[in-house]
Length: 447
Ligand SMILES: [Zn+2]
Image (cartoon, rainbow, N blue to C red; front, side):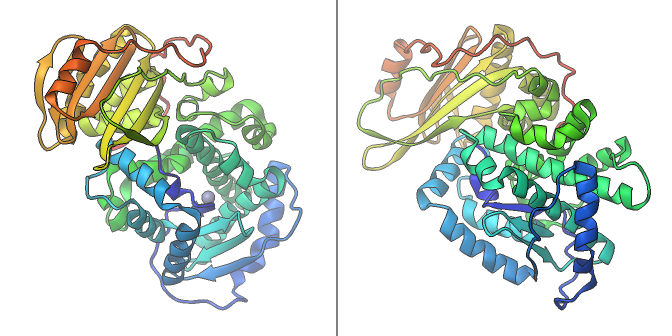
């Protein structure tokens, strides 16, 4: 469900120190390091540079203009509306949230540099010190090398078939570049170019600390924060796990045989075992009146982790999210007034975990709306009225389904009395083993 807006055909280097606004001339010394940096990266990865990479500098104001223009050309209003509505109906952003503006402000604040894989050019923002800029360049040049060997546009735009897969691909791209940025630093100091556990720990902790430096990021909803940071943090740990198993082959392996969902990023063992999320089919609810489909998609372990962190707590999220097998949702707009309806289904590895999730989802329903009135409530069914209309949420075996935004009490009573059965999954995935509770390699996101 992560908005594609944050990708924007750019691969950014985040964690800008953002201190200086001084402008530098084109013969500034850091770019004289380009050849040296590329050669070092090629030595580590075995990927040779095919063409020199054009480069330039930008200040924050120019970046803001550039991003605004790129967003206008690459994001259709319908897609922005669909992404924004999805986030709002799940309660992951406030109802007055402006996705486009927030993304623009956030990227302007966060980017230290970026590689534009549409134009094949890299840009460095004015940051504070030569050393920082050199490391940032190592990150961007890693993207350029990868692009010359594995076609980043194709990898990011044609490969993924859903948002959770898209997030996994971003994690491959940013995780590898962040890992290589650290490897480059080590190589420079004469050490083995493999990030140490301490350095990896800093990646995780660093993403949680600099709140005062980043007012836009820290004011963003948790879901927005974490979807921006996930590719860099969890992506780096994922790449490290792949490197430790495959060595030098890992640089190509993650592009030739990429992870397909956020769960494989969080649990590299699932990537190695090719255990992928299922696609449970939505029940055939029969709603009154005409409807238009706004969007549909997958929810992955990342989405559930944040949902449960926001509305329950992070311990619950860390315990339960790894047990998700797969989830699908669809958003409709009903009639002329375009009343939104959310349909969704979550498949869990056992009926017990599904039952546990139903209890958590009661907290989600209570938390995401200003008013939530329960009219029915049993061990397997929750029904009532929320901000967008009536809802019915059900547990059936290992599945939890929810229909939210039913027009009135009569329609709700009819649907609740005779709910459709869960449709058989469109494609039955291979059986998946129950995930151990302790499998989560990454500490849960801070709330
Ligand atoms: Zn990057």
